Amino acid sequence: MSASDPSHAPETQVVTGGRRDEWTGGVVNVPVWRASTILYDDVADLRAAAGKDTHHRLYYGRRGTPTQWSLAAALTELEPGAEGTLLYPSGVAAITTALLAFLKPGDHLLLPDSAYDPTRAFAHGMLKTIGIETTLYDPVVGAGIADLMTPATKVLFLESPGSLTFEVQDVPAMTAIARERGITTILDNTWATPLLFPAMAHGVDVTIMACTKYVVGHSDAMLGSATAVASHCQRLRDATYQLGQHVGPDDAALGARGLRTMAVRLKQHGESSIRIARWLAEQPEVARVLHPALPGCPGHDIFRRDFRGSAGLFAFVLNGGSDAGRVALIDGLKLFGIGYSWGGFESLALPIDPHRYRSVTRRQAEGPMIRLQIGLENSDDLMADLAAGLARFRAAP
Ligand SMILES: *Cc1c(COP(=O)(O)O)cnc(C)c1O
Image: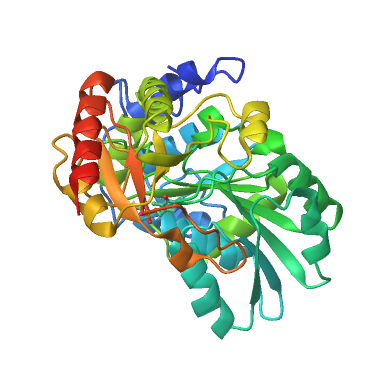
């Protein structure tokens, strides 16, 4: 086995990526190399290593072992146009490190109003403390983003589709404007992964995933990644090393294991979620379905233009009714767990109130909202479970 071939399709690359002979030692998946101390042959060997770039060379546990290098290489190979990938102990750590890498005091950040809430909290918390100002923008502003850029703007952050409300952004139009002005673009690509949205082909400089979600895929490890184009890779690596970011080899191995089946899982998540979203849209208890693959979702035309398929996470708005009705719907579900972190094999339902986290795009919903993660269960079973939930909602006072 050698490094994967860029001419192969992504479904092949998730299987072959990062499996180099010198890292696998002949077994199929890369073994777990646990290390803090690396031993040198003699003082001369130690001294020779110190001045050099330690990338892909055993140096010190924090710089990784073949277990982490293999996963990082596989993620780089999946993203056409990428130079390298850094791994983090969570998706949030990937986001905060990338922002710190490309912003300094006095700079200005543009952040979509639909950003994942901890990303917002970091902008309004630590970034503000160190003198970095943030402007929240309407995620569907498109080329209008130019009007919000100032000479101090250094990072345009993107997240598409947006958290909770699923607005699809015109990423190519926005990255083109940013690139002209030397502004770094960072995309949170957790929902789509490079399989459904190859970020760099759409002009993004740094693409981030909460690998906790679809890469790990089994709800049993936390992991993040940031993948950069050549011009941005060294700065990201320096910030990552200076902040001491590190992923344990056991978690990296769980990420690599999940990655091998990510393409087939995503295909099933996407197919079932579209089927269930379409069915929900026809139910009288449902006012609106926010699924990027359905026409009612803001940015649906852009989704059809830019995405290769759908993931399994979406939301819907109930037609009037009360929170008690929403609670009755969710609490009685048999196949949907109640929990936040999605992307695993199992279905989830979550009551959401996105207006609490919005500043520039507060839209009045027709009723309470629910976010669904459609897992790998049979979609007829899931629909029957949801149909019973809608009956409970109808019957609630
Ligand atoms: C879950 C999530 C994250 C954070 O990932 P963690 O690994 O939980 O820190 C970031 N962005 C999006 C869009 C997410 O859904």
